[in-house]
Image 1 (spheres, rainbow, N blue to C red):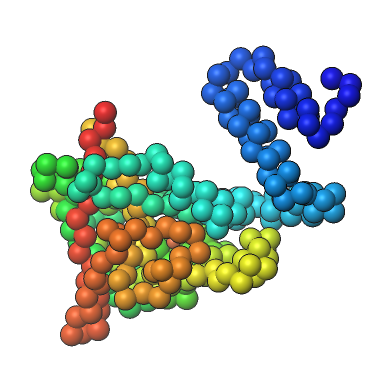
Image 2 (cartoon, rainbow, N blue to C red):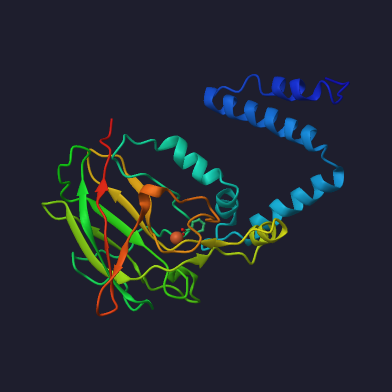
Length: 276
Ligand code: BEZ
Ligand code: FE
């Protein structure tokens, strides 16, 4: 191909990938090339804009480290993370729906016994969380693992605090023989996703806010069932209709009841989908 022009370049690039041995990689690269080229044609991309785009992605890479994943954040605010979750986690009616993982999950969080306080000093109104883990026929799921994490009253996860080496408001619990779980933590509040980098720049340039509605994260897993990554949202929270990362699903929004002593109670039943 020595006479490349606007009309033939897409086919030339597709031909160059024709011998890709991995069939799935070939499908993905071919589609990526076709969509990238049609995107450039549709917006009539200028050289200056191409350069700005390269600079933007370079800055997304430079701010990314072990504690800050700006690429995931970018995928989140573009709705790509939630689209991928929705496409890959269709659940039968009655099973708990999935939502985005987000960048603040930490592998190897401390294990707690049922009834323990996972806040471990995190600031916030006390909140008791309890419920059951069930299978899709209503049967209790004993020994299910519940990996939970949340932000504190300042809207920050433990890992966002300077030093942030101590696990706070995160932990792993196991359901009992009746599928029940309960633990103490703090009340979730709305918080802004990190917006002091390139993703924040994009949000500001688009008149979008960085806020997420109040939620508690869960990964619920048990042998014989598909692992569920989800959140439970507060139904009295701001931003339920404008979540910066498009993660809200009606079935995950519920009442967090305030008790007479000022503390809160969240009750939630997880219904797991059997593994194939
Ligand atoms: C979170 O809920 O922790 C989260 C999700 C997406 C982007 C930022 C934070
Ligand atoms: Fe979160």
